[in-house]
Length: 233
Image (cartoon, rainbow, N blue to C red; front, side, top):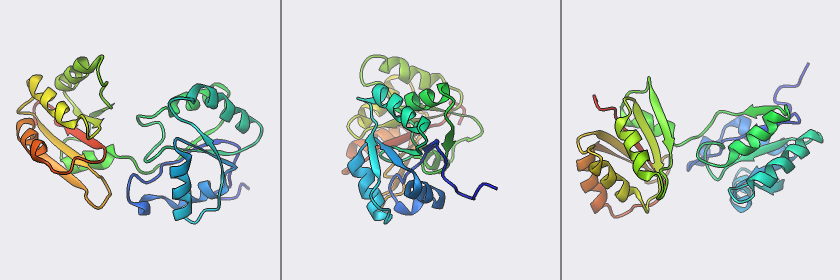
């Protein structure tokens, strides 16, 4: 009989806290303690997380936007050699608006076992706190910075479902103004920031109202999650 929580030669997809360290799961801690290697976007940041969890130093391999193609094959090689690898992002669930998909596909193509763990991600608590419909929703990720941005905004304006997207603090004011330019000024939205952290905040209202609040906001820090109600809401 297989031992409960035994670690296999596989790729473990391990969510890490997006703010509050208490959001780490017992299973995630067990995996991080016992895998052979951790593939991480930022090895220093992951090292700090392990230290806070009192997990002894692990072997790391960096995996991020700039080396994803080469490292995906290298990590798959390690697993085929019998090693266990945990994939983590800087915060939240790997594969949500980050380069993990290339590694996941490399493992699938080689028939390497993937073991995804449930856990922290920013858009789910933002969706729940918005009060908008959860039966049907679309996650759009980050808008393009330049090319394709106008088309992206139009897709959100045209969707009949609750829409969820991420934005940086440097472009969130621009995004809300783009919503107004797209004729969405009366659409209800919820702007969430610093989710699970000390200064967690949810700004609710229609786009025009939220534009005024954001414009006067004194502390536009941290990544933002914007939840947009469908037109009928």
